[in-house]
Image (cartoon, rainbow, N blue to C red; front, side, top):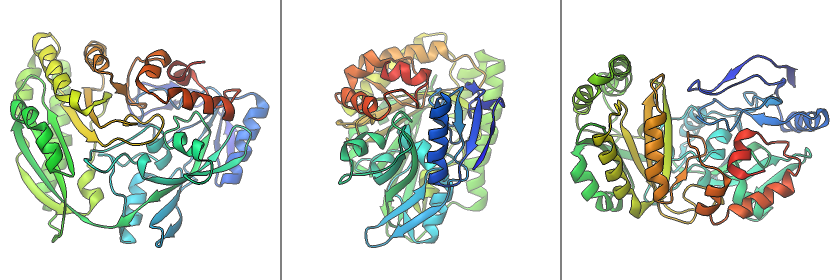
Length: 437
């Protein structure tokens, strides 16, 4: 195992979290990972694992032992009879997606970026949008967990089912995930239909758009009445991916290059933001294309930002979004990033943001380096009034007292944590706030 004294600073992707751990470890096997956990416990060091740092919260921060899982990568096993794939926890989603496609396989649903490690993505509840198919964690069929005493525990619906129910979205609080077994299916084609639509039309027809499409999402551009919608549905083909030039214009030049420029201008001259928003909200034109899932679900995100996302009961989403728009319209806020709206079916994971209820997600963003507290505070006030659950890896101010009120199974999770990690080897300030002492 590669282990060394720390004191190098680790920063997350957004740059808002920085820590200097006492030690770092890069285990290359589950045995080395278990040794690292036992060694840290013996030295009185807290333990956290970091992936690619795409969480905006300090969920992975530690001044103790920081485990980097970049050597715990690759596919362990593909079971074509059970239609599962077992993958090491440090494997980036982008590598998993490419490897599965080569094998003629795919995850059923995924988020819109694929930079994260599989354990980092699932442990924080990363999700895409779906009428019937849920988050990445909901596609887990088994996971391997190194607990605080260095044991390697296998969890599934049949083996340690109480741990399995919670550890699929475990927040790093129950142990270190070393491997994950996902359900997969034969690779399929999706047809994406992207289309501008007015705010009034998309909100008035939201229920129908959700019901009629396997995957529906939209982006509202603050200071305008304009939205961009995306509908992804399975297709018999043939594949018809975006052209190289047109795809580059939409996904790189407009969505990343030009977007970077307009956000930089907006940060320097906030008064220009509404005018910029009116122009940029009309820049993306309607298009339709067909490709394999990860090429449709995901897209590059090179413009850095801060983000808050809340999960609401799906029936509350339109009302909350209209309140958000009214708040922005009457305030002096200048918001250059679109608001993203997605959905998920109810699932059975203890602390999933969609646990036990049909869900819609509303995500607000601000360009990196732009003051965001006033906007996020106002948005959070609206979301919490509707019983919103904050994304575990995105900016929020909620604590255990609030979260216990919006998660019916919250006590089930904390009791399990008390059993698996009574000394809080995997604890940190963030977990103390959201789970309690």
